[in-house]
Length: 173
Image (cartoon, rainbow, N blue to C red; front, side, top):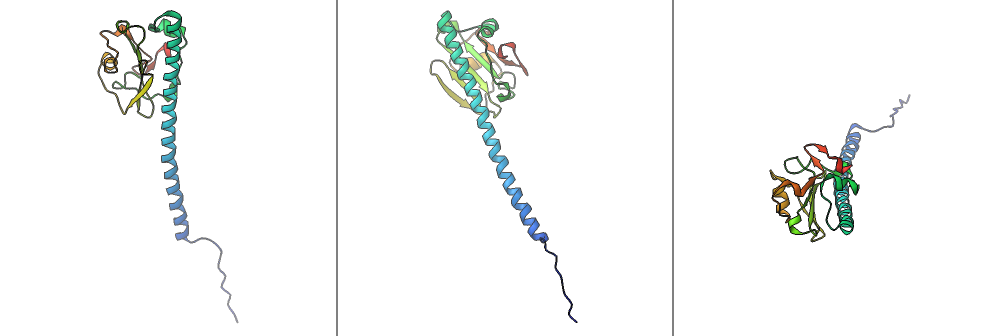
């Protein structure tokens, strides 16, 4: 009499563990890559917003002889930004987009400073037409920030803040 041994087809525990480990490694690589791509997308959006604002400011200057100042003039040109791309702000979390200008330097100079969700702070200056970046920008005073980027200020009337103390201002709508 022959006894037949039947084996059930399937995977062993070791084979299953190997597959799970491989899937976990692939998932970790994907998450890291996605985070990097997302950060680049935020940075690109912030840079695009700043370029668009700069173009709007230049068009305003062509029409009026000076750059816009104050919420009334900024609202008149329809300043818009992609709010979801901006982080918690720089200057100890107080500001997110800072627009610096000063009449004493003439009508041809301004700077925009903005913080992306990636944590990178971008500075656009009208005299160079270029961006500079920093990992963080911490200062206790937005006047000092404007002065640090070459826009010499003595009082707060020469700057506008699009994001202040956790809230977007009406000029960023």
